[in-house]
Length: 249
Image (cartoon, rainbow, N blue to C red; front, side, top):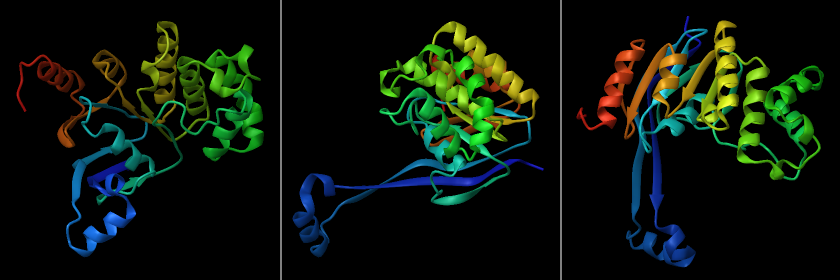
């Protein structure tokens, strides 16, 4: 049985000129049927499924619809068309620093993020030291979060998500941030999570990372699904050929 099913998911954004014209002009244009509305499909007809313990790498150039799709998968956004079925708990890191309060300390933010993920204070008390040790932030626990570097913020976010044992872990470019030593440590943690049975989705611009870590690949381009499957080397090779200008879509 699939732990995650995405069936024919399409996501549409509606845009207009309201911000540029103001309320009065907006009302007048609506009355005169002269208000322009544009629609933009960020994703179109995306379909895939994952079993427990599988790791999916999502690849594609900027504007491919990767991050928007993750928002639908995690439940932040409802698809315009199609549906998503999830089993178990989800921990999603979609934007660096999201869900944190800059004025709170590292310690306070750790507990806050844990609560947002649905974990009890008792669980967080038992896990807190492990999270801080993994993130290498032992000397910064009482610092305001806004004083951390982007790499430190990334390390804390990854540590919380990866150490609270979710059934589904979603990472958007998270382990691409930070120094080489932390990337190696986070990749080792990813392998441990997969071995432990968690289903993981990773968006990464590193094809080498996808090759090494993932058991399936989803290739998106301008919102369209180009390929999906377990032929990780083959799909990555074809994507690299596309990036090199040797393959047309």
